[in-house]
Length: 155
Image 1 (cartoon, helix red, strand yellow):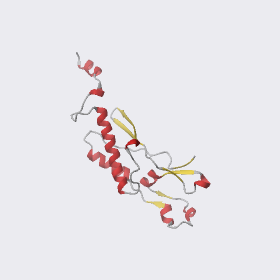
Image 2: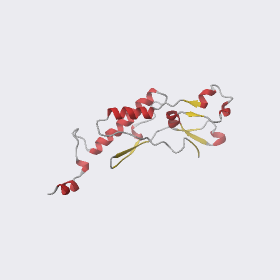
Image 3: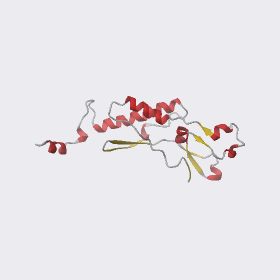
Image 4: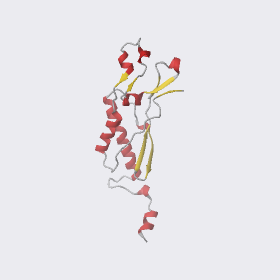
């Protein structure tokens, strides 16, 4: 039997790594490690326990690329002006990336106005990715985390 025929008939789902785990199990293990690394960084900051195991979804492999989608629970919150503008905010990404309010006069009557108009970025996602890249034993490096199209929207 030729090597080509052997490779074509190989059931990759049953091939085991030196660890004894299948490729699929190794990928799930890597996804969980990524989640845990980001979670560790979040717990050090202001959004503790917002990511849980059930938030992992869609592990996709395309060539040399691995796509892991993390769903963040409790990240959607009504804007403080929701009663008048019906808008919602993605608090997870706003805190990770930081923000500056362009029309800060909206907050003139607020106590501690500075807390509402500016937020220094926490970068817990980026720091978690760096931790993952240092800890993983697989030849996987996370390069990109896709942000939502909007951090603030109307429903």
